Image (cartoon, rainbow, N blue to C red; front, side):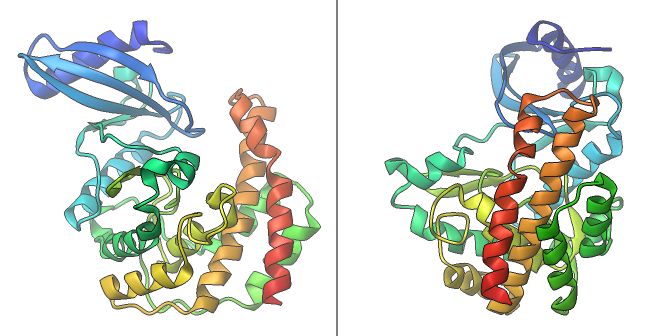
Length: 328
């Protein structure tokens, strides 16, 4: 079943919510495809039933072929994160069956706020809260890393550097810069003190912000078990500063992030360890740029956005050179 546009999707959404809420009819209005999201579709809409209107979000796989268990894992991660105090939308329903809405999906409450990083980093509306965001991220990550892996039975636990190397080699792309960075990372790898649930994509752009700070953490599709410092390093990766100078997400300083994280988690992270993961994150995004472009070029998923992301490989190679000059 193909449900490409609002005209086909709205009635199916109404049927799903009628079963969930056990009330009829459910009227769907304002169904709008939101921008962004190369790996998932995001739709905003309102559902009205029995004189009550719920502002909701549909997060749907791009094709019916995606493993539905991945969407269920995302929903489970959001529920477990909310349990330990991470700000999250309420998950109403998640389904792996593509026949319901054309692809596996999650429906959740809509949290008002801003996700566009450049606005959070530059608009006057967020000027007062910006200096506090690094510490907020540290506290949120401190809570996030207490999540119970047992609540996420399908979450992977693999060596991140080995996995990244294998993904890079599978692309068939030659990059002397990424190769040099891989060798440095392998030779200088820090010893992980413990493992935890890792969000995997915790960064500016996947956070809903407001004048009061961070209101929700989104996009759990890369959740896994690993070294928790990976999340801190990814937040500091230069690509996610969106042109702003401060090293933590473009809005804060290393010291604020690390002090707040230590206060919340009791775990001390040294700067050298964080910087290793920052270089890892730069290499990782470079490999992901190659992979996302290949999805378009191979014809498996035609997307101008995926093609454009592929062009950003050169930026990551440039950033790798700068980091290696600092670290070597």
